[in-house]
Image (cartoon, rainbow, N blue to C red; front, side, top):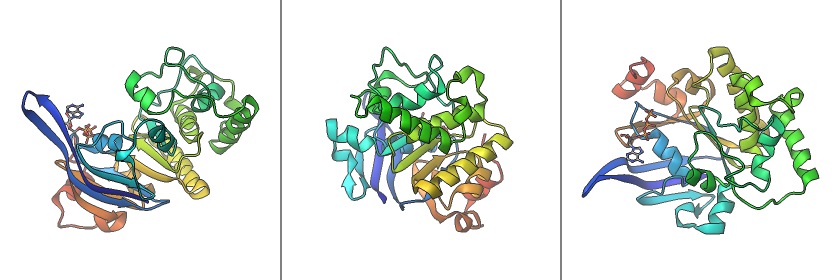
Length: 271
Ligand SMILES: Nc1ncnc2c1ncn2[C@@H]1O[C@H](COP(=O)(O)OP(=O)(O)OP(=O)(O)O)[C@@H](O)[C@H]1O
């Protein structure tokens, strides 16, 4: 279970000037949930998800994973906690110069920032995500795990292909396999289907649902696509102007006709 308590995040934007992006956010996410975080552009969704794996340090409040407050952790303890949290991104962020197998093995191998630069991720985030650590598995074990993951995401026949030869959906499958390599209990999805067409989105959602059922991984996804939330998320929270204004079972939140923001989001009023 993830318990977010009184989470506040402020950014310093000028001398003596702060921007409050998350204000006293409280949320409980149960094990095995597929939990959607929705809201208008600028509501604070990305910041929230980045706080969950401490890519951003909250200004105040706590984030408890299985009762352990991760905001209190540093160094090695933090790195090992982060192994419990995988993340996928809108633009897949694969290593274009490495084949599928190597991309998936990435988080399991000794990695050096200068050898493996993931596009779109800053060096700092990159280290924080744990892509910079000692190999904990033998080569043979890594190979076995990669094969398991290829099977899980239905990409066995693309094992030695390079990302440039893959479709968007296949690239996201590789990214999902990479994110799951260390067996995390939580998978964070940052607009994971936003760059995909509707048919491919459908197949990625099916895959995420199957993985959720098979591995019991808790999935937290931020998205601006309400149909994605309706299809896959059992629960949802609505962020509006830095605060959670509604949360609960998706069908209940979406059928609350008194909520202006929900009506706006469902009506496609964003962007
Ligand atoms: N590092 C930062 N420094 C200062 N302000 C920031 C920083 N990161 C985000 N913000 C601001 O925080 C607010 C919320 O941003 P965030 O990216 O979390 O919103 P969002 O809901 O994910 O938006 P979108 O749907 O457009 O991606 C924005 O006003 C943004 O400019």
